Image 1 (cartoon, rainbow, N blue to C red):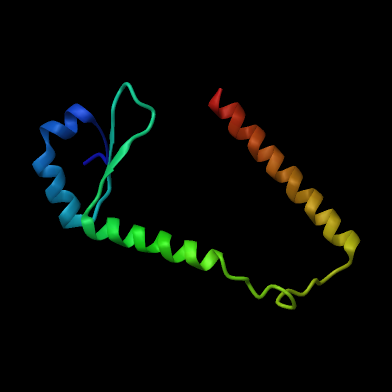
Image 2: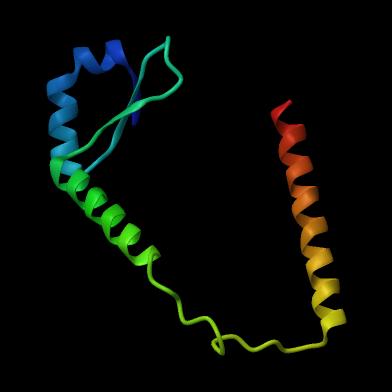
Length: 103
């Protein structure tokens, strides 16, 4: 079954979709032709899990991370700069390819 449905499809098959969400712990995306944003049909259990995860991550983000001394640089500054330049070039090339594919 598709996981992305129009609102009219979802309305016609609501009982079946609810059963699938509860059985498979699925998330079904429902879209309306006049709106950009979609809505999701998910189980209450999954929704609670997502809410708790967001709350936990929000609370954790306020605490400092022990970064100082946890990383060690291997190689010279010049090697690091060279590798960063290569990574940036690769990222730019990938972005260009994706842009060309979407046109």
